Length: 513
Ligand SMILES: Nc1ncnc2c1ncn2[C@@H]1O[C@H](COP(=O)(O)OP(=O)(O)OP(=O)(O)O)[C@@H](O)[C@H]1O
Image (cartoon, rainbow, N blue to C red; front, side, top):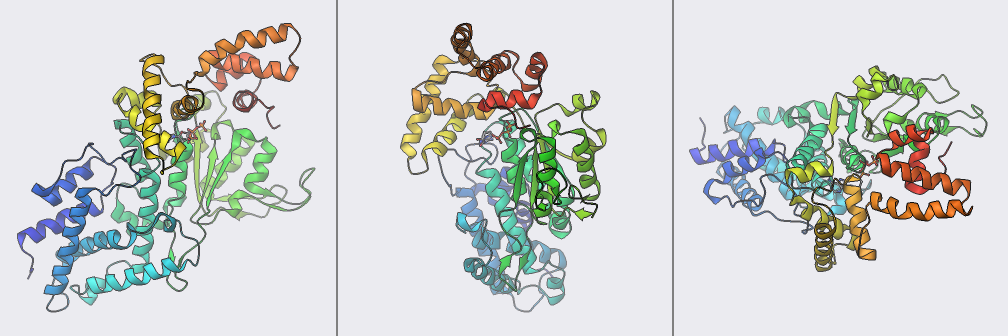
């Protein structure tokens, strides 16, 4: 017979729902309210989002819930008269409350440097021993049979560390108070853990790397940031024998496919055998081979990749097989593929430039990033939080009041000098440039204005014969790019390839051929 009263039942049930919810969906706030009832203190926002000016906030509701959960499990351990005194359903709910308590006692409270620990860090081994012993103690109200049905402590420890890595990567890096920003954080969480965290912990933790993720959206909107948050939050098993997580932290490998020639892309990705092409003076291990099981390879600008490489990538995405250039020996990719593009892949497929089969391999988990204009359309005042985050990042956490001041200057500048409906074509990256511009020169010239003012200067120089052909081409590429607003349309107008345009626009150099 159950020995729990109604209040305890309610608390266990609501804690269980909270433990397994997506923390970035508005539903989390409702679940916190359900746990605390009248003791709930209203949150400033309708969903969990970082307050830009605070480096770390202890939320009053989380503190209150953690105290309640902690008191309840300690009370039940104390009240326990004989082993296995909780019925099957209550035992499962009780285990969820123990998991919640263990997370806040042992994982949420660790320092930032331990979120991605190095191998053989003795502090992790110590944290593990405390975690394991405490779980054993808190499991006293469960029978041996009930305990046997639960996951092992090392698996739970690994899952909770993964939750912490995912939470930090999303909460601390993906800023924004708009609806699209909330949906983005929730989608990134779902890409890591799926919508069912219980099933993930039981079964999928070891399988999710088999699903590739495609991140799409305009340039400067945060695709690499999202890829990094997903890639660095992969499941890393914990090995109690060594007291370490398996593998190294440094397992997110990013490759910009549009910045390299096709041969270099192949050699970087797949590796090559000595003598496989001119200049291949030694064997080379590619990034796919270097990537460990719990790591991720990020293929940025996948929409730009050569058709011959698309075929090879399809093979990797489908069966994980590939070979080094100049070899036939089949090798297997162990990690996760994350790809990104700002191109419209549907249009690329229609034009025959991107393989449909590769697209369908990549798109089962797709995250579409909103533009900055979409964030601001939903919530115009969200710009203040973004600017404050960027000034804080630029000046460092120690200079909080300076960051407040700079943010106020930037916002005043935007308010006075940019049109209300300014589209921010360069997205959050452009907002970053604006913050830097106001910091350094007290003003910011959007690319379109800059192009207009510099055009007269370079045309005059060209007329006087004072520009080299290289400088003239760079200036002309920038001019056309500012006019048409994209690398692809600019490449069409100029009759050169997109990589060259991008390289000229971003760093003024000739593209790597
Ligand atoms: N939601 C966000 N919160 C905080 N910073 C952001 C966010 N989105 C983007 N940024 C910042 O904007 C800049 C550009 O981001 P990122 O490089 O990830 O964009 P991208 O979409 O990959 O761009 P591209 O397509 O040009 O490669 C980075 O400095 C990043 O930190």
